[in-house]
Image (cartoon, rainbow, N blue to C red):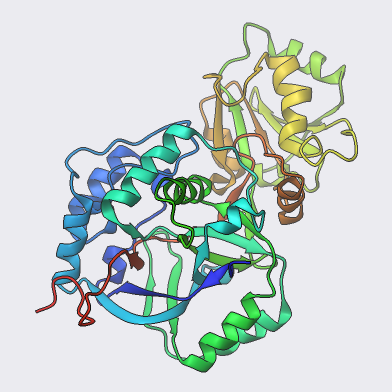
Length: 414
């Protein structure tokens, strides 16, 4: 069986330029933000990209004026924005903020793992988005936006990563989102071999962020009949990842009154009005409980039990849809209904109060175990079920096709 993990040669953002090069997750960047960032940061990796090519299909950011990503990448290489590292290596990438820190192993992941089930998904993908990413990968010939994945924690690997991160990092800076980005190179033969051995024990990976990038890599490999193809991934143990809830707001009540909404809900579940001093007190404390903001009041909804044995139906996002959004608000398709908007939990409970909507719903976060259960059952979650934090910044480690010529020189070398 093809090994799932491989070390690889790469270009790394130079330490002095890394903060400018770092690219926020493209699926969360609006057109206005893209234009501002590319104007303010001439060396941002966003200049190599063309559009937000890894959205879930609900919106696409089209960016004018960026027409030749490979030429721009070669220019950044030749000008020293990127530093070549021709030895095959693994890389360790730590993301640290005030309340969370996680360290992932950056490796080339074999595309073969997608077909044989070692790389598992929990989201559906859109063909047009896959094709757009595949075109980008073919034209630019570089993987710079790593797919984030998780695995069931392995203590031996955890101890090894801890040892390897005691040395001096090659990149270390505070990104615009106040997340410290720290990267180490692992290229000593003994350390590479140790990581090879430890990673070989991981028999299953779960995508947390980058379903479309992963699918596009598989699509491109199939088109080119490349059995050895891979994509760049960063893998984190499941005890270090943090899932934030993805909340919902309904823009209008569909022609019914607030009193009618309460009556319809009470016919299906327990509904309690909350008398609290501040919004954060309304945050759901456990699974099966949803908080609703409507008419300047908070309510607690106790969702009916779901049928056991169905990992999707047991999700709070699915139970909210089947018990509240569809029967009470008439939202039959949560992916396409314009009355429904999604709000990441990072905005906080007070952020929901400020949203322009008739009713907003705060959920308890989906757990990593639930994500894995859905993926293991080869099912997919409802849209916007998970929000993983913190997000990996792209453009810092770049795997480029035909990176070095026969003399070992990189493109643009003098």
